[in-house]
Amino acid sequence: MSCEERELELNALLDGELDTAAERALAEHLAGCPACARTLAGLAGLRARLARLAPVAPVPPALAARVETTLARTARRGRFGWPVAAGA
Image (cartoon, helix red, strand yellow):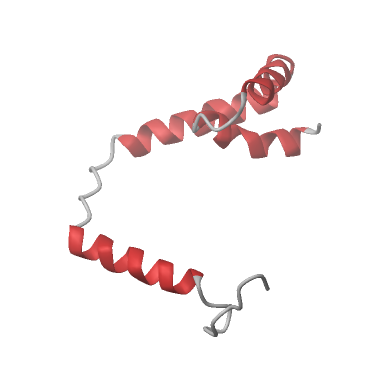
């Protein structure tokens, strides 16, 4: 796998989204690739700086409910807002 393809996995690694095999393969790549190791360190540093910013305000429950309702309704409709037939 190329460095470009491995770079796509770096955020997944930081998010804890890789399975054991993928994490092991990426760790092996990072051990031999200073460029990808630097990119990972940069991403980790960026995340740390962002985490120190002002905390995100909690979402009011009424807003969360409206967003969830809208998303559920949108998911049942096609690209142009038309209902999608089951099994289509």
